[in-house]
Amino acid sequence: MKSLLDKIARQALFRMDSERAHNLAIMAFKSGMPLARPPQVSKRLKTIVGGMVFPNPLGMAAGFDKNAEAADGLLQLGFGFVECGTVTPLPQEGNPKPRLFRLEEDSALINRMGFNNHGIASVRKRIIDRAGKGGIVGVNIGANKDSEDRIADYEAGVRAFGDIASYLAVNISSPNTAGLRSLQDRANLSELLSRVLARRNEVAKLRRAPVPLFLKIAPDLTDAALSDIADVALDKRIDGLIVSNTTLSRTGVTSRLAHETGGLSGLPLFERSTIVLAKLRLLIGPAMPLIGVGGVDSSETALEKIRAGADLVQMYSGLIFGGTCLPGRILADMSAFAQRENLSSLRQLRDTRVDEWAARRLD
Image 1: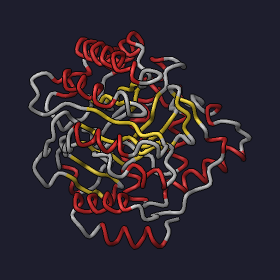
Image 2: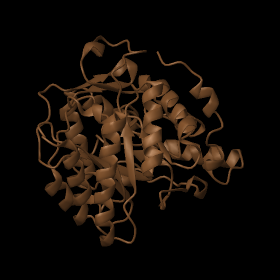
Image 3: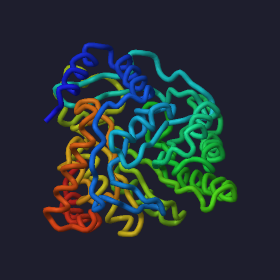
Image 4: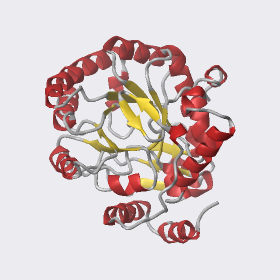
């Protein structure tokens, strides 16, 4: 049930252009004013991934806080971690406006932002400035639209953030930068991961251990492509995969805005992204961590991602439609579930429905 504050804020923000409303939300989080009561989170939700201890498995996905301006405000809502970005070496404006659309009747968003961000130098300074404040803050890195060597752009991201980020996410799955998804092809992916891991190991001398490195993939991949990604990820021994980015599919979408180009996120993405998550879990095996993203808007959807193979989950559109009190409600419900089921850890729930989800057909 939404709080009165959430209802008032939603009414006001939803009257505005989507991108303007988003920018106002970032300003509110930057201000430091309390936007929701900090939740009481059970120790049963503690999750260890990549050597990091997460107070709970619910994170904020990349795309919301592109420039690392609002991480502390988001952590105050109860998120166990926040992923900033996507950040490219050089600042870029992104695609022409309008480029962000709310599909209210579908609880979904379509965006074609195009990696708009302030660039490495600016975001690095903000990450350094918040040193000592605590919390797990990862950085999602990408390539500039007009780059002549996109892999070199990812190497630059590793050099810039490998000594200060909690973890790095290599984003090769946005549909809004032409040709970017080709980096998911087997040969290209092998070269990409070899080069970024080499840079990661060079930077490792500046911290106690190499920064954990995750790969973010698309939900629009064939079974053969998923198999190739799993093989390369295992061969290169990356720290985990994020499943998934936005989709080009419009299955289940009823809004008149469905024709807008760009990536779809929100509730209609839940089934597709969860099927891909489960398929990848079976391919990758039980050891490598997976982060489940897409359509998380309740404790039920978050827990189902874990049943389908996720160690951690992330949300984005759910916060837009559910309000600032939603993370606290999800965590309270997850805590109550763990206690009711006598689970010492949600790890006990993982993979319990992976076969069922993996067997479902992708439309």
